[in-house]
Image (cartoon, rainbow, N blue to C red):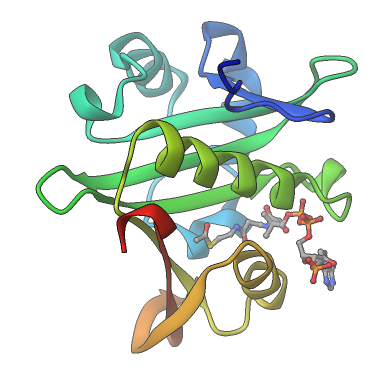
Length: 179
Ligand SMILES: CC(=O)SCCNC(=O)CCNC(=O)[C@H](O)C(C)(C)COP(=O)(O)OP(=O)(O)OC[C@H]1O[C@@H](n2cnc3c(N)ncnc32)[C@H](O)[C@@H]1OP(=O)(O)O
C-alpha cells in the first residue's frame, strides 16, 4: 500500500491557502521571530497575497516549499514549516520552522519536522536538509537534535540581533538511503 506523506495521527501539513493570510500576517510581523529569520521588514498583506498566489507549492518550480502545520482534530493552524534555498544540483534545502506561541510545548514542531523529513527523503529524494540555529535557541537545538539532525559546524557572529552578534550552529540531516 502507498505510504501517505505529510500526515500523522495528530497533525497534517498542507500548502498555503488564501485563508492563511491572517495567521501568516500575524506571525511574519511578530518582531520576536525576526532575529531567527532573515526578515528585516514587516510584510504587507499585499506582499503575502502575491506570495500565496504565485506559489505553485512545487519545490522544483519555486525552489522553496512552505507548508502550514494544522491540527487534525479541528484543522486549527499551528504554525509553518518550510524548505528554502533549494539547490537542485546538490539536492539539498534549508529548513525553517515556527509554531504560533499559543501552541508551543505540545510536541507539534517535533511532529512537523519528522513529517517534513520523511517527505523530503522518501518522496522528493533529497540528499540532505540543513538548518541554522542560534546557539541560545535551546528549544530549537533540542528539536533538531531529537529529529536526527547533527551539529556539523559553528558560524561565528552569524546573526545580528539588537546590535549584537550571535553564533549559529549548522545542523545537517543526511538522507539515510543516499549514503
Ligand atoms: C532553523 C530554524 O527554524 S531556527 C528558528 C526556530 N523557530 C523559532 O525559534 C521561532 C519561535 N519558536 C517556536 O516557534 C517554537 O518554540 C519551536 C518551533 C522552536 C519549537 O516548537 P514546539 O512545538 O514548542 O516544540 P516541541 O513541543 O516539539 O518541543 C521540541 C523540544 O523542545 C523542548 N521544549 C519545548 N519548549 C521548551 C521550553 N520552553 N523549555 C525547554 N524545552 C522545551 C521539548 O521538550 C522538546 O525536546 P525533547 O524532544 O528533547 O523532549
